[in-house]
Structures are given as structure tokens and as C-alpha cells.
Length: 67
Length: 412
Ligand SMILES: Cc1cc2nc3c(=O)[nH]c(=O)nc-3n(C[C@H](O)[C@H](O)[C@H](O)COP(=O)(O)OP(=O)(O)OC[C@H]3O[C@@H](n4cnc5c(N)ncnc54)[C@H](O)[C@@H]3O)c2cc1C
Ligand code: SF4
Image 1 (cartoon, protein in one colour):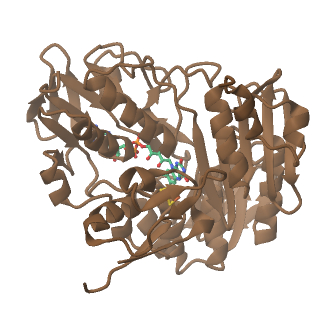
Image 2 (cartoon, rainbow over the protein chains, first blue to last red):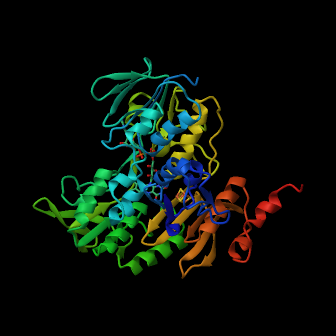
Image 3 (cartoon, protein in one colour):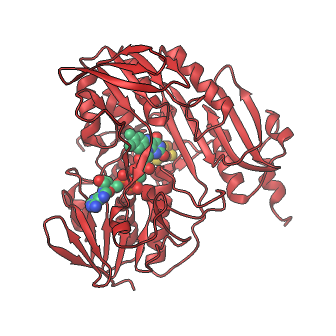
């Protein structure tokens, strides 16, 4: 799985951090999303999918590879 | 208490979040989530943004698939309308005549867009609230040339920006003297007016619609009070919402422009709660009990109510915040600009990267930011902590707003 984010659209809602705290963080200054791990391990995939779905600005994009 | 039967009416943002939050907070009893729309619970904000522009499809809006609700023990019933409330028998009566008993009932019924009088039954006149609405508009965008937006609020303006992307000629008609008038300050409204003009929309402020003109049932023009005739093959109406209060009102629960709740989100019936777009609640950030329409409000209230219903009552006290995306310009608002008497600008106004700090007396009550997320984030924290920079500090781009937090910390 590869994560990309559309920073221009991020509104700092922080829902991604609640859903997948090991993969997402928020910048202290502007609240914008920080991806801690662009290729999260398999045990994080479900949480990352939840984060992508919850994000109200649809910032998080996932590319699944066949692993 | 964690074993009681909780029934939630309304499977929108607030109802969906509440159901999940209740399970996360340890609620073990029955949990029923009832929604009258045909779709699985979904997000509304992209409806007027990425969905209309064509960037995403409807499947991207759905929060979760049915298996998720099953695994959490949430009895999700979509396509189901709650018709009536029997408070004495603690039963909710559904449209098909069946009923469900409850220990605690939550009303998360949201709101409906206000209808423009005289627009009923004319093809091509739309508003945006549901997936079904947005689908109809998107289909129409593909074959229209002249869009008229009635109402210069957030929804109408987001639609206008998308319609310009689709290449339509766009006219925006607003009855008030400025855009987004009820919600934002004059300098920010003016910056967004200029932004929409730059995007190519034509603006009519202090303009009233006299009538809609249809030919063979299809919209063909919008006539304004001063005789101006705007050709139209697509009209989008965004003139505010009416909260869904019928269930509560008919059962004798206090309503006043929404379902009235206390700081624990309880209605005048202590077994019945309300949250989200339909609820009027007291807040230290507002001058009087208010009803807010935002994702923040739906989500924070859902988390709060989950705590209340699982035996951890506290007073609701979240800072309101909101965002809107209009043709590449990101507007973020923290706090509520009610009764403000002083506005201070920070940043680059002509470059559309600035904030307006709104004061009531010497107290900061709201900050509106255009493409300045750092100001927005600082504002959310300042308002939470009840800290106000002086107007001079706010206006000085060299002043570090975060230094106020450090100053407010008791010395270790
Ligand atoms: C197009 C659009 C764009 C938006 N953009 C933004 C944005 O950029 N930023 C932001 O902060 N907010 C935005 N919002 C506002 C945000 O979506 C709402 O504040 C939020 O959805 C409110 O959640 P809710 O659950 O209270 O109401 P809703 O999401 O409206 O859900 C209520 C649900 O209850 C159902 N219902 C009502 N009565 C009954 C009944 N008797 N029986 C069964 N079901 C019933 C309704 O059909 C509905 O599905 C936008 C809203 C719209 C429409
Ligand atoms: S949930 Fe979305 S908008 Fe919010 S911080 Fe995360 S990426 Fe940004």
C-alpha cells in the first residue's frame, strides 16, 4: 500500500490521526497532515483505509499493490 | 447503563459517528441506527466540491460497508423513516407502522434545504443536500451553459466555482449586501467576492429574484426585481436550511429553530437527546443558544454524546470550526463571529493569504483564514484556551501567536 496526500486540500480535521495514529500525525503549526509512513505494514492497512474514508476533505489517496 | 437500548434517528454524519463512538466507548446494549435515505451513510462536504467537479464518484463518499456495521453490532436500517414518537411508551413508530422500543433515543435528523417559493415543479432548479441532489446537478452540468446561483452562501459559492470549472457562464444572486453574510466578516466577504469575479462569475448583490421563468416545464431564465433577466438552464438554490424537528415537535419536545438541548445534549425529555444540524445548544462561544451546520459540530457532539450516554457526563465545550473550498481558495473559520465590533487583518490580503481576527470588546471571538492554515490552527487553540492576542499583536505578522501559549503556562 502506498499513501499519497493532497496537502492543498487538508483542513486539519485530524480525523486521520484518530483513525490511524501510527501512520498519520498533524503538523504542530498549521494542523496539516503528516504521513509518518508512506508504505504502512499490512496490520495498519485497515486503519489507514478507515482514515482515508473519514477524512472530510478526501485528502488521503491509497494505492494498493498486490502483496 | 452501558446495556440499555439506544436508538438513533438519522444516519448522516452525526448519527454515523455517534453509533461508532458509542461502541468505542463501551456501550454493549442494542444499538439501532435508522436513516431514511437509500444510501449507506456518507459524507456531504464533497457533494458540492470534488463530487460535482467529477474528481470522485459516489462510492468514495460512503463511510463504511454493511459488514462494518455488522461487526460493530450496529443494527443499521437505511431506507427507513421514523414517523412518530410515543414518549410515554418509549417507542419509535416507523413509516411501515412497525415500532422499536428504546431506553435512550437520539435525534440526529439534520436539516433540509429551504425551497425557493415558485420553484416547485420546474425542471433544472436544484439544491444540494443529498447524493441524489448532487447526481442530478452533475448530470445537468454536462449539458448546461448558463447557471444561476440563488443565494451567495457557502453551498452556492462552492457550486459556482465548480460550474466555472465546467465552463458554464455563472451568475450569483444574493439578497444581502455581501457574500456569506450571516457567517463571515466584511473584509473576508469582499476578498471572496473578488475571488469569484476573478474566476469569471457575475455577481448581483442586494438583488432579489422576482420570478423563475420556465418554458415547457424547463427553467429558461431568472428575472430579478430590477428587471434584469438572467438566462438559465441550471439554477442552484442555496438559501439556508430548515432543521428536521417534526418528530420532536409533534411529541411535545421544546423546539426553537431546532431541537433545544442542554450542555449534555439532552432535550426537554431526559431520555431523548439531539445533536448535529438539528440541535440548538448553549455554548460559551455564542451569544445565545445556537444551531450550527458543520462537520466539526456533528463530530464533536457525537463524541461528547457517546461519553454522556456511557456514563461520563460532561458539559459540551468544543470550539466551533468550519471550512469551505471555493475554486482553489480555502476558507477556514474558528469560533463564531457574533456581535463583533473590531476586525484586524493579518497577512497578505491582495494575495488572498490572510486572516481576519474578530473581536468583541478586547476578547477574540473568531478568526477567518483564507489560505492561512497556521493562523487557523493557532486560532483554534487560542479560543479553546480563552486567550486573546491584543489587536496590535494580531495585526503584526512578525508576532508569533504561539508565544501566547507559552506565556499562559504557569512557570514550572
Ligand atoms: C453539499 C454540502 C456541503 C457541505 N460542506 C461542508 C463543509 O465544507 N464543511 C463543513 O464543516 N460542513 C459542510 N457541510 C455541512 C455538514 O455536511 C453537515 O453539518 C452535517 O452533515 C450534519 O450532520 P447531521 O448528521 O446533523 O445531519 P445530516 O448529515 O443531514 O443527516 C441527517 C440524516 O437524517 C435523516 N433523517 C431525517 N429525518 C429522519 C426521519 N424521520 N427518519 C429517518 N431518517 C431521518 C436525513 O435524511 C439525513 O440522512 C456541507 C453540507 C452539504 C449539504
Ligand atoms: S483527516 Fe483529512 S483533512 Fe483532516 S488532517 Fe487528516 S488529511 Fe487533513
